[in-house]
Length: 168
Image 1 (cartoon, rainbow, N blue to C red):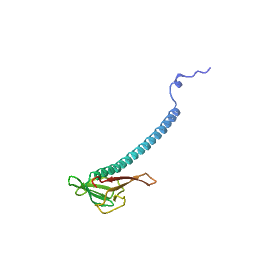
Image 2 (cartoon, rainbow, N blue to C red):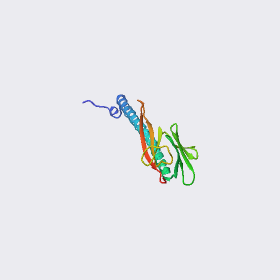
Image 3 (cartoon, one colour):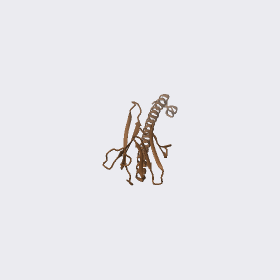
Image 4 (cartoon, one colour):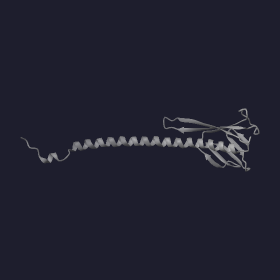
């Protein structure tokens, strides 16, 4: 009968340790790749959500002020000027991806990452008009572009709303 020594039963061989470390390295590497991918997806979703919220907040802001206005003073495809009950003139202008807002002149940043702002003045018959005395409703369109990773393409979304002048 052969006797095994106690010394051989107490430790791991170099081969066992090497195989174990290689397995741990593969698991750690794949775990980090999964975490990095998950974080990138969460970050992109968060950025997209902020851009969408900016567009919907812009629509709500314009609709609220149009409802409160006494009259439309000027309108263009990407700009609007309203006379308010307190006598102030509120102005909105779209320029290079940003919507500026202000009293008298558009000086303050209201929204960024906007691909277009469309303002269409409508009369009572829902017909586009440029006569500020006939404007009853203002159609608002806000477009955004959501960037995507390579292969590079852009996902575009449009938000719409209607502002109705109550004092008409």
